[in-house]
Image (cartoon, rainbow, N blue to C red; front, side):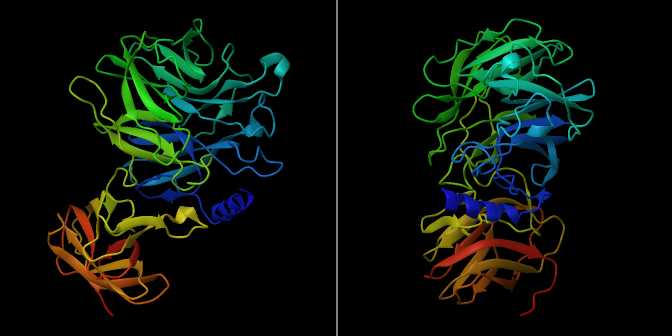
Length: 453
């Protein structure tokens, strides 16, 4: 574990904050988890927790380790901006110094102010007791600066705060501590206005945490991770009141197929489409305390029930044809095509697609060519004995955009070819191997410049 942590720390040190492009995971400059997504104005803002790797003297090695929070935003769910750190543990008056317990947060806007809720350990156990308390920091903008309150919220013990403001203006706070609890908030958003209620109509067996409540067509959806078997899956219950009673309604996302013990989520509507934000340990498959935020589309049935979401690496959003199209974040994939890490030491570099047979293919949807007249395609690839990749649009038998010859070699190279048939607008791409040799591809990209050998 120590060596693994050192390798990942090396990877982290090479990354810069700023802009990250589409596809899952959406945050690629750091580990992130527990995403609270909110629509403020014409953009989506994501407030996740920030997983770091514990070392001796810095957190508990092998366990969750979190010291601060960042906020990310996007106007198109494709390009994400890291606005930097908005709160850190040793700048909050009541927090236990160097506790590395800044767990899952939430943020909401009311009357032009933004209220950021976060759980962590208190320094004064005589005044606040042991365990987690929930604090609030306030800002005039969704990106901060956030000024923390001097004390945590009274009579609240637990983690995973979530805030919901109903159509009538009433605000509610939800949190978890084995079960899920809720109470109405006062208009000042930092004090409870009612007694705490245990939302006890949920399944009685197994840990329940991470509540996230939203309303749609007059129905209140209480969503939460639940350990029904061995690890968490995402479930939901519905009711006609923000504090219930709620009736179990179904599963939103099944347990992780690779064994990531936790999942934590939020659900928002943006530009007439609903989305599920959640996390998984894609960049850290051997250590599930280093997680990454993802997003996929969410759909409702006519009766209001939620269709189960299947996690993807393609994610959502439209990819600009002139940018690096990470085909390993595929929409569909054939037999004889597999996915693996480009560099085992720097997982944030993402994955490669390996084609092992003629006819192996990967499909990548929603690439925007706009009105540009692209002339050249570039493919970052490697093929020890050489290879050929064909790019088509529309379907596996659709028009051929280009055929790229991958030179023989053991190193990554950027191979280029002229585009045979130009396309405009949003297209679905198919990348197909045309030779019985092992070909690994990292990304493809299109440019307007003329092709020259």
